Length: 136
Image (cartoon, rainbow, N blue to C red; front, side):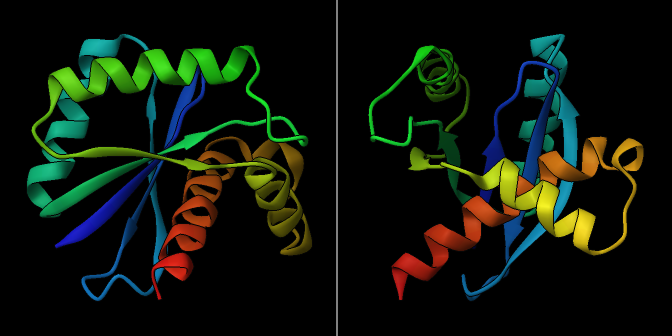
C-alpha cells in the first residue's frame, strides 16, 4: 500500500506517490483543480490504480506556525475530500515546499516557463518525503 500526497493549489493540484515500502516519494502528475468533479474523478482513479492507503494534503502555515487564509481553503478542501473518498485523509505542514521545488528545478537548469506543472508535483513529493522521513 502507498501514500499519495496532494499539494493543493487554486489552479493545479500536485500529486506525488510513495513507494510500497514508504521510504521514497516521487512526483507523479498534476491535476487541474477545476472543475472539481473532474479532479475528484482522476483522484479516485489514482487511489484505486496505485492501491493508496492514505491521502496526505499539504497544510500551508505561516512561518510562525499560525494558519492564514490559504489554510482555510485547504481545510475546506480536506473536508470535502473526507466526504468524497473512502481512503483516510491527513494534513501535513507544507511550509516552503513550493519554494524548495522552484529552487530544485532551477538548480537542475529548468527555465521558469517550463516549471509550471513540475513545481506542483515536485512540491507534493517534497511534502510526502518529509512525512515519510518522520515515520522512520
